[in-house]
Image (cartoon, rainbow, N blue to C red; front, side, top):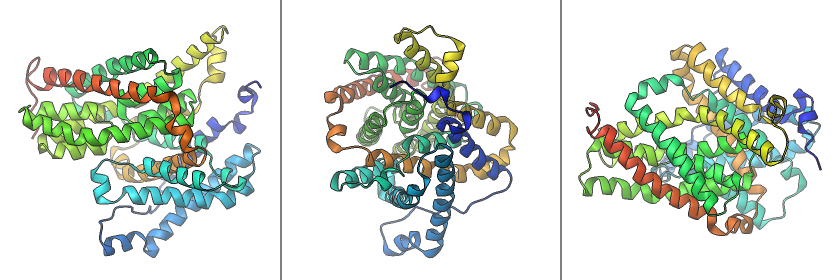
Length: 428
């Protein structure tokens, strides 16, 4: 069966529709729409839990659900799918996505660095493996659309100004770590006979910024969603012991705080884990870690664009077709353009005060799209498929690449932040 995607009218193409939905949401925010989003932060005590289930919070959640349902239904109608079935299945998927964010909002779980995406995946897996899912529920599991729309909104939070604020040393470390570690991780994965899709997602997750990088890469190369869920689980599982062991190593070996913070920022794959681990060392260590992690996060937009072009050309070359500009454009994932455009607009065309005001709202809207996506991945996956995927080779490649990342990033952190090549920065 040949790929009919290039022959679709643009307004029936899922990529363009994801860009359109993301653009509508971003434009509404810039025009003054300020949705009241639900809160998911809670302490393990009755009063705090009750607050998250209060009528106000549930009403806000229902408003988001109706908005997302309406937008997704329009998309399915344009794609000539079955939007009526969505009406039955979407509330279930949304409820699971809400529950995933609520579980991750617990203060203790948040301290461990476990993110909502892993809970969304586990909830979806539990449902799909314990019950036989009806077709109307599967119709609401629109993983690719949810991911692509979330990525367009994510672009609005990737700001070029953050590179400048991060400082020259943070930028230099980010470039050296991302480029070298990505190449090593990809090389190691291929040596272990891991396929190209897996290798690319693993390399991006290890080298750039964990889950967000894996999601962006999967979208850019139109990768297997089951492989994405596998990589996500690896990122979060490996991050937990690193959060404990790395701060301990910094203190035990009397590593300077700034070096330790830069080391954490370059190796830990989630921003939350960097903050939590840095706080175990000192305030300067935590701030340095955040600076380095911000620098790597900003590279995500550049990486997504380059990876999509590289992947398209690589696939065409392997397929024996002559690579032309027309073929690259037809196969190019159009939502990447929405991601980059959102980043450019919010970096250079929107007032900094407005960007700052919208930061929390953008994160909330993006998290709902991604939570929906990972619940959907779980609903489409069987445990046996996930656990047995690749016969353990992808996990070995990820752990080996992360070990290299730990050593390489420490060397770069020592050279840049330890006063070896330059005067150590003053961060208090």
